[in-house]
Image 1 (cartoon, rainbow, N blue to C red):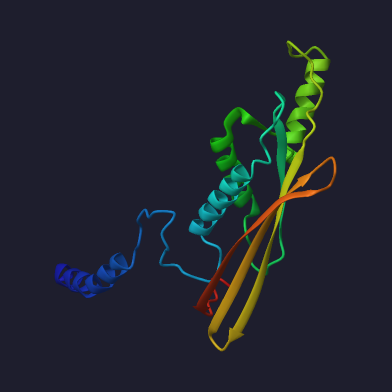
Image 2 (image 1 turned 90 degrees about the vertical axis):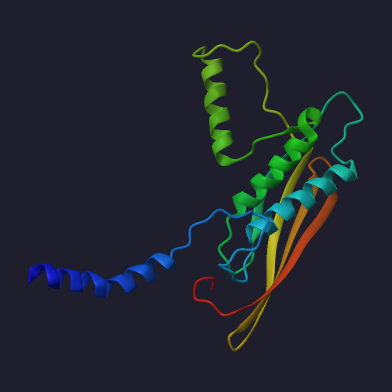
Length: 200
């Protein structure tokens, strides 16, 4: 009798277990393809397209090409987020820096001015000067010719459940000697979606 009850219970639960298994989604997709999650936010394909567009345009401008044997140097600083969305600014900046490094190689000097980078530099320089580690040549901290910075702005409209968001991401390359804005470009995208508690 106990076996029959156990079997009956298992058969009764079987449809629920099947539904639960069918509802699980776990697959790898191309970062350039839209995903099923949706939402009016900057996606992976936007970050990749943005980094590609900015790096290509900077290279095409020729600003970072040096007329002397000394390589042009630059660093990337903050990306100010003026939107209501939580955006990982580092992922955007890192992708742009990687694209520039891949395409320019040793033609330019990309300096690390991050908080973590500067802390490591200071520790290593102190260790060298104290004789704790050896160094073939003690160098000064490299100065930079340019700084690349950016802003993310949005224009959002809501009507009932329908929402539209326009993002404008602007980057600027500034001459650190003269203060001249030497290059600028932007990436823009607009989304329309129904209001979601997940994305907003």
